Image (cartoon, rainbow, N blue to C red; front, side, top):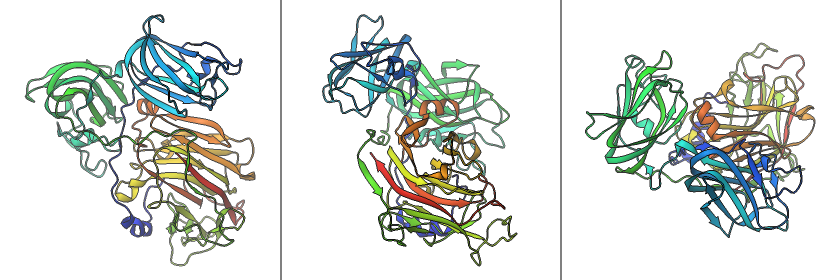
Length: 567
């Protein structure tokens, strides 16, 4: 449920609760090499669990082996590639002991990883090596069954670094041909390309910088061997540009040149040395200037600053770390140690006034009920109600969040909800970046909508993500058609979330996976590697559901059985 402005009362109430979190960490995602490639296995439990299911990109299908040791799964990448990461998404039948190996010819193998203490779940393994073939060999099962993988993902390609390479550009000073600092792009300074915050960017000046050439330079602090440059472009990208190096910031040597730049994320393998690294653009993609969300340089030497550590990877299904079962007495408010009520008019042209829990009560039967009802709030101001014609808020409802009380990064989150359903209603279960209340505006903070429902589309449940480069109607996501009115009963709306993907599900059935590498290579930065808090609300009217009308039946209840977070 995109939020384009802040409820002023809420900001004043909650601002004191927050300290500034660490800057979000954007990880340089290598290229996924294994999806859809030819794959073979030592065995399959049955035709329903073929080897190909482990590389099909569908988290709802899996390979499962015969019930014996050892077993192998081997993927052919088509050509020899530099390898940087292997991600194993295990089903419950996982390997306690296994190896990951690579080979150029399918005959002679080199070990990339080995363990005798595998824990299952999702394992992200950073590896160094090369090969056309990558093989998993399981030698000890964790259960009496075989080995079973939802997904076997191999990453690398031309976008890999060499052994010993580190990020050299983080936090370094930069200069540029110009920069933008106005209402359209405030503070879009050169340093923003090197801060590892995927929601901030450098852009050339809107008054003097929409010209060719345009450039940005980073000072690595000392001479370095440069092996990789990763550019995350805004839509104002370079069609023609060079990557150049220099020791004196005056005389430049070109390491890379193209006249067919594609924008979005470009991962470039280069080889050279210098203290200064420059992107020198000579042809723009459109009538605007040049703009980069990120300009990352990898290699050895320099004077690197270690970036903040990445959040720990979760294991699915994980351990319950937070929940609310709503087992309070009938008429009780939501637990104040877990939830804060937001008060005031809604946003996005919604018509409700959110009350201080007058519309959010526990029912004494293990549920929280958020009710929308026709009820004017004297002295309030809302968009004009199409039924009464009044600009005084004619409806009340509830919106609660866990900001300042609970936030989390990665894991499995789900809620069992019976949504409201009538013309103009908009119930939602969603997450907002915790840095929203420490000065990071929407959509820079990131938003994850696990469930949205609108009364005009009774059979659909929506899951969508929002960021600076894709938000509002341009958010990334898709609806699930349940084949019946979503409001007819309870449904479990869930999400699995880590550094590489989000998978959304309804009633345990995964229906949409959003992969980080796809987002970065087709839409823009991934802004979801930091804490988020939970929100439940039941809106009426607004840009998405449209207004209530003659067919609207009130009051309407959104009933929440539980909310649970696992890590």
